[in-house]
Amino acid sequence: MDALFEKSSINGMVLSNRFVRSATWAGMATDEGACTPQLIRLLTDLAAGEVGLIITGHAYVRQDGQHSPWQLGIHRDAVIPAFRDLTHAVHEHGSKIVVQLGYGGAYLSKSRVRSMSAEDFEALAQAYGQAAVRARRAGFDGVQIFAAHGFFLSQLLCPRYNDRTDDYGGNIVNRARGLIEVLEAIRNAVGMDYPVLAKLNCRDFVENGLNLKDSVQVASMLEKAGIDAIEISGGLLNNPNIMHSKINADGNQAYFQSEARVFKETIHVPLILVGGIRSYDTAKQLVDEGYAEYISMSRPFIREPGLIKRWRTGDRREAACISCDNCFEPIKKGEGVSCIPSELQEAQKFFPQLSEIVPASPPHPPGTGYKISIGLEDWESNYIPIVKIQMIYNERTLERGLSFPLGTQDHQKVSRTIADLLEKHANSNEQ
Image 1 (spheres, rainbow, N blue to C red):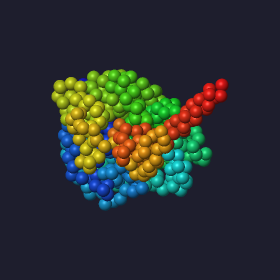
Image 2 (tube, rainbow, N blue to C red; image 1 turned 60 degrees about the horizontal axis):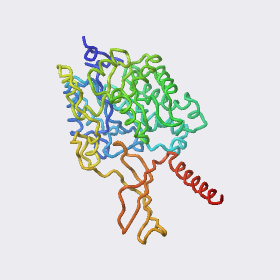
Image 3 (cartoon, one colour; image 1 turned 90 degrees about the horizontal axis):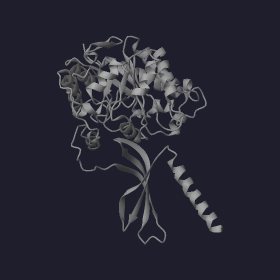
Image 4 (spheres, rainbow, N blue to C red; image 1 turned 180 degrees about the horizontal axis):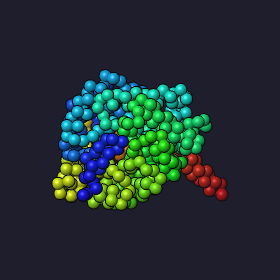
């Protein structure tokens, strides 16, 4: 029998196949974080399309942990009834559904990590535990702890952003302490018989980021603390070029295949692999050769919610998704995620929050200036905070300009290079 379509279980959660819909920001929640009929239809279509396990987009466990508009929240009991409608609809089609629990955005500054006290960490862990209780009451088959892509728990693991010197910083055991405490709080709240998964970066792919060795150690710590399965991904949202480099290097298939092999040498809980998987043959190879027990995808299911049913019934053509990322454009208008033509006109990508205009000096003509703004910019369908410098001429702001992600060393590097060039120029003139 084809291993991709055999039944399996994760801590008693029986799955009809080995395909997982990876957590995806759908932009279909209410302003209060509640599930909407639109989201229920989206996820029910995936269940009807025979996706074995559906993971929701990350739901904030506390109000102050909301990352984006129209994001799910599981921070209060009032959201439970609508979530019950969702889980019931998914279960009617034979799929299982897990809610991803998250906190905080991918703003990647050291200040938030530095400001947390031991009491703050304890309170946050308890919020995760309470959210897991709500998930169980709402009929979810399990929860997934979101600790990837530079969101708060991922920031704790990353030495580039976690420079604490207490029990929550330094070596990887300390940097993982907050994550392990979250898992322990969830286990204390829901017991050992409720499936708890985690999503983890195999690498951050930035200088002084979480490396593969430390990530595998975190996975081992999670296993000892009672995790039931681990989904591995990679990269930070303020380093969007990592996905493009992976596509170019690996032929758009299985970005993290080699890292998965290293994980499998150490951990024994099921491994879920996401990233660039678009074909049935690749998925089958990864499972047959032991790289992972489960195959996770996101954008292909936006284009084709019935992809798995198509593959099961014999149509093994590659997923139709071309990874253009236009599926996230409607979210910006409050319409929710959907597949739209790749020839979509370019949408607004920069949303300034603060701006100052600095008049330019001669030899620039009068009316010329520099507009310096701080705001959110869309980099590979993820909003990150940036500083943007644009030219103004005749009261018209030129759209193109330089962007520097906050929390990076780009500002310092550019300023240092300019100073070095000026110093070299001065020295050459003196000679």
